[in-house]
Image (cartoon, rainbow, N blue to C red; front, side, top):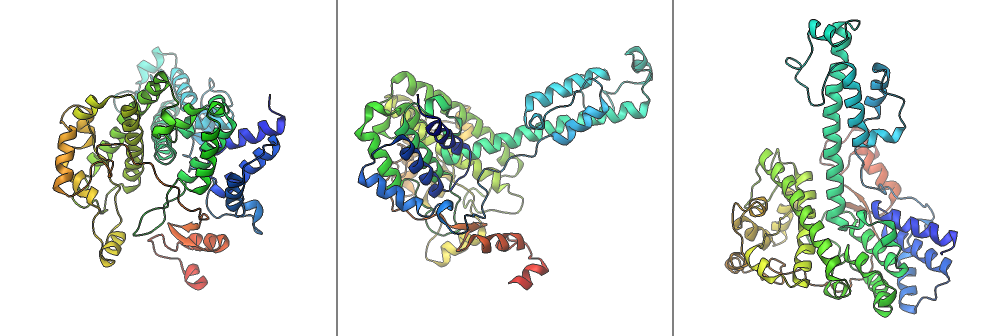
Length: 457
């Protein structure tokens, strides 16, 4: 059994899988974790961790970052539940966290509905309300029409709030999936099954959770020299590594070779389900406002946030799905069923920046535009075999293997470690205190700055 200190640090590392801590701070936590265990680190790992942890908040004089250290959480139904408690005698006082639990919110709506003879889902104000005779027959004769209508409207609004909460919680999960794969859903017992693998998973997840930078070049690579040093420890002690846990976030051929076919199949089933869920989200965004598919440049009315979150989740799920299919030898399925990648929407100013610097649209955009839409492929409405993808890639001079159109993503080489910048709407700012002031002033937001901002500038 680990000591209480080791257990606490391991749980902090596991908690980071649902947070958005800077990789530097996770590296410092890993240092503390190994020190508490008395682990004798090799020189490469010790040097790499020290290089990253040097810039952790605990080692900086201000100890402050202007960026949120968790993914934005949806606003819960605490206010609505408090109101329901005052209006319905059957609704007891509830703890604050009940407002974030859809199951408890639905239970309250159903219980309160029984008080006024209303069934869940009866939201039509003209057709579903009880008239005077029906209220009397239901034993509601003592409640005035005004009080009855107030309660009916309250429950109708609570159902609408519940639907919004479910949608936003799903979007948050999709965002975490796109950036960190299945890290956020990794159970503690599985995460803690190997201490070195737990450290690697925590760090690679923190790297994946980093925010995008406003640039006309490539985004920062996830796999860096610190991740490489931590992964080398797994290579050197494969018998002490929980490879199945690692496969949730880093499914390379080397990792999957250590995982049983049964566990691989379980992961494949999960990713298949995620692909279908994300495809529904993409289709919904598309149907609400079809995109300019030939350029993927944002136009007025496009829900770029939802689309980009879903597109990233789709590409992550697709990459894991492809890798697992190949590891299981399911080449025949990939020959018949090869859904394409989904590009993110690009802001018009970034597209202009690309053109001015001698670039243009990414070649993948042209391939995407010529392939069937992913949700149509998943439903079997249109066919997308490997041969079709290869033909479209050839037409646009894209390598289908190197571009991960018909094969898993190539394993990345380790990139040099670079400290995490403070970002204000994607723009790097040197100082976190300045970043807070710029963000409060609305700078780089694309909106008009307030007069106070003009004075500050």
